[in-house]
Length: 172
Image (cartoon, rainbow, N blue to C red; front, top):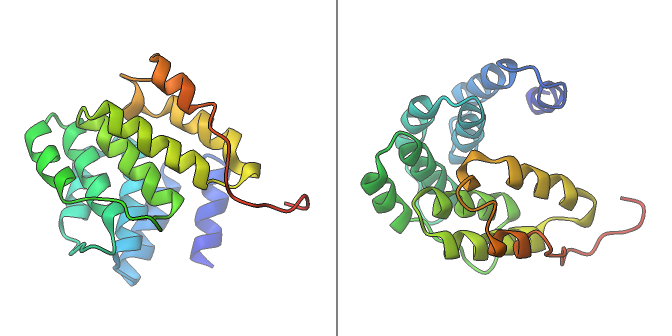
């Protein structure tokens, strides 16, 4: 029920409500996933210090690279670049990494100045997104402040041409 309400509030663009929904979810079930979800919303609202606080309390091992990635983004947005790079060094993708994690890792690489790695990971992200969501995700990437430095580059434009590799039925 809480996830459905969160989705509704995000779709309706109720600015602060998703954060409160995410905070309640994370308070009731504190996991790496709920922390990442709350931090993602806080980053959208430019609440970078709050996102860093939430993420720094999570014991994120190899199973939660998105937590480390978002923490690096939050730190970089606060001009703590060296600390962000140290955190980024501990976050990595594996061959089975999901699209959400790939997007977080791409943002992380861009935030710490690893532009080539950001583009390569963004391509992997686009390949992992279902075709029915791909255009929306490309718009999201184009407007993401973490990619601002690289959105006008040829490499970013080439990445935006990436097609999905996810099979999807015509009913989707």
